[in-house]
Image (tube, rainbow, N blue to C red; front, side):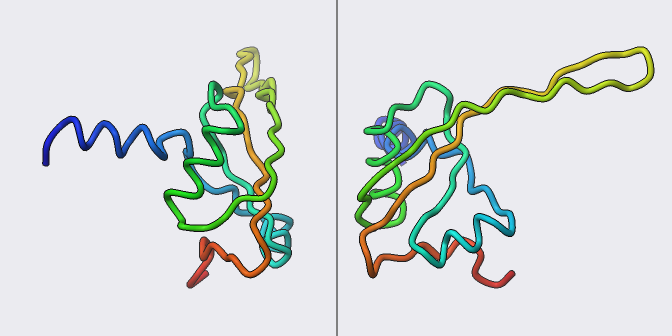
Length: 103
């Protein structure tokens, strides 16, 4: 595959790092809302383009949340989890993303 094509494909939906799968987000999926972990620098427009291209659906609305990493302690050592950004994506009624298929 040509490197320029590979870069274009990666850039087009590269801001989506993965789906957030919890009990709450699975219930949200039934209502047409999906939660993704995204790149911290991604804008709502980037996220919309990425989701529409990757899953072939129509996005109606997006909310983003910057989540701070928790401070964790192990004995005397103190550390911190990474900060990350997540996006709640509303889809057009009738559209669906099969993220948890088979679980």
